[in-house]
Image (cartoon, rainbow, N blue to C red):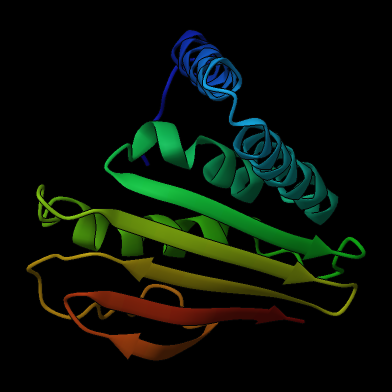
Length: 172
């Protein structure tokens, strides 16, 4: 996994925060009040999802998700999370290993002239964790195959060179 130092992460987070404030200020300067409000609301919702993710109590997975946009800047990252309770099952490292392996499979093959977007939705309760991975964009690599994590249930819903969607289900 690509590791960033704490300083690198803090620098990137601060840079993003300043950019968001400047975007809001620009909308206000142009008297686009509703656009500014919408941007603030979207920004707050994303960070609510990040905060909710901490309920997983899977530190490696949470770190992987929270640093994704800084380690893979060519992909716009959107998160949705609904973690109602900390799951009993503990497959933190296996989950990160699988997520990292899948993103590494396509990252070097992304088309630099196409917008790439990953929507990740995490749903969890005491009994299970569901992670929906939905990557949209363009890349030129063969479909992904892995024997590494047979203990994780993965259902691939779609895999082309423009969309890759799978559901990772973790249960006891």
